[in-house]
Image (cartoon, rainbow, N blue to C red; front, side, top):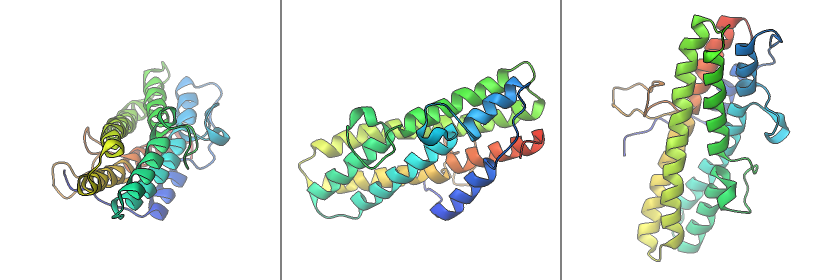
Length: 217
């Protein structure tokens, strides 16, 4: 698997916070309303936070428990923590767990959808269209990686071999870090927003740039 660049949760939280800092969304702008759904508030997320924020919250839980699974030498413990990863990514597959019950896939998919709607709005500026592509691509990368994790997690759950389960747990842990921080897929020393590279950090960065260009925060 390609190398991932890691950031601390504190640093990533700062990026997200910068992207979502209390804007005044214009009631007259369809593009701005959809940006607000991604950054600030959506009706059915936990505490009605923005969709990208909801994705970040679930991704942190998934990464924490993936790391615990990867660090364990006990098959039962590995499988227990992997079920927690599954709950954070898609709670419809796992009734109980430490996630918020919304799911990373649902949140990131929603963020990609609404940022796309912002770009498609009649009043969308060139800055919105440009950065929406960057945010949306990164969000779709997150969904792709999260779906791949769910497939691998199912294999861990049914494994009877500790060494095999641990190796897969290590792969899952690396993938959760890619979700948080992006992946240097082409190994050029940089993580961009492009397909196969951008994660939540890159989505948040370009969401912030979009809002700054629009005078929203």
